[in-house]
Structure formats: structure tokens, C-alpha cells
Image (cartoon, rainbow, N blue to C red; front, side, top):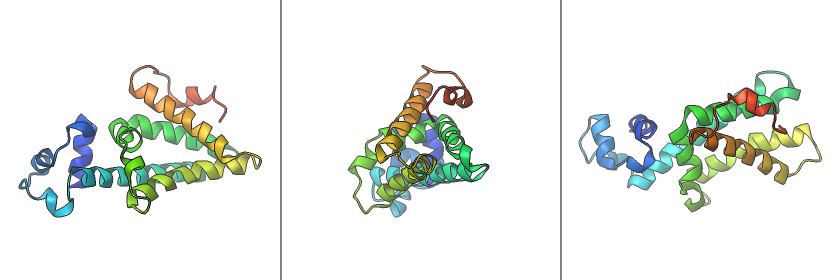
Length: 167
């Protein structure tokens, strides 16, 4: 079900996903999705949770694939590449309102919160005087670039964009 939902979201965005369209894409009875998810919001939360987990893995892999002093830059590239390669999933994760409305102890809220930790840790490791606010500013820069690229306002490759940022 999650694979079918991810494919549907990638092709048409989350706004068009319904339990019926999911069942059709998966080739199962219309009632089948309800065996796994209570409703559409539960399904979207599961897809977003999985997206945050994959996003976090990409950031951690980038951070560990080279010298410590360039880890933050590699993570920033990984951030932009993930956003560009998963536009509709990224929108679901960061622009749908799912996370702010999630229960504090939900898997979605935990996964979303955990996705910020690698960036926060790298920012403070590269500059011990840096604050949580500094990490948020860098996150905002990266998020803005992903969204501007997704909406067709920017066409530059991630490496070129990072060359002019304070990351």
C-alpha cells in the first residue's frame, strides 16, 4: 500500500490521492486500504513518516561519506537532491500541514523532529558557538531553494546554489 501511495503521490501529488485511487493503483479491492489505514490522513501520515525516515538516512549518509570539515556541505547537497528528486513527497512532508497537526508522540512527529537533528548536530559541530537558531536559518535556506526549484523559479544545480550560501 505504501509503495502504491508513494507512486500515486509522485505522479499526481498528495491532493489527488484517495483511498479508492490507491486501491486501483495497487490492484486490490476498494476496502483493502482500510485494513491498513483508518483513513486518508492516516495513509498520508504513514507516507510522510517514511519520507522523513528516508530523508534522514540520506542526510546521515552524506555526512558520513567524507571529511568532517565538508560534512555540512555534503548534507546540504543531499537535502537539495532529495527535495528535487521527491518533489511531491517533499511537499507532503513539509508543506501539507500534517506535521504541525500531528500528535506529539506520533511516529510522524518523531520522524519529522529526527530529520532536523543531523543538520543541528553538524551546524553546532562546525561552529560550537552556533545556536539552534543558526541551524533553523540554514534549514530555511535549503527549504526555500527546494521549493523555488520545485516551482520552476530556479534551475541551477544544487552544487552551484550552495556555492553562494553560507553553508
